[in-house]
Image (cartoon, rainbow, N blue to C red; front, side, top):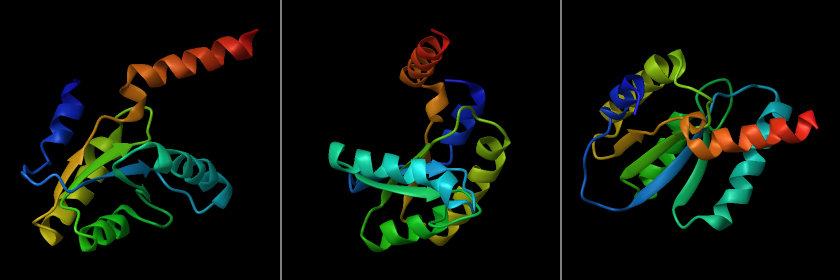
Length: 138
């Protein structure tokens, strides 16, 4: 695991409760056309995973990360994994999102927040991009 991602994971608090949800975190845009693929992804994934799943945006549109954490906390979830739908861990994932999580930890001290590696760092994602490029180049 790269050092930048390892550092992000330190925000996580440890709990023994398995009342867990997964938040898909996209950057955000006020353009609904930009949001549509993320909403479609959430809709396709919900029936395929057993974990409670929500889409949230880091900024610029709703539901924000703060809104989703609040809603899941009210539903009784106390362990929230956050999967960034980003190619890499740039400034947003090294600085901005950890700052959001620190603020959320202050507001929801009983909720464990874990920032996972961005999808772009998973081999399956890289393989999917390679396959798309190969198909497009033929």
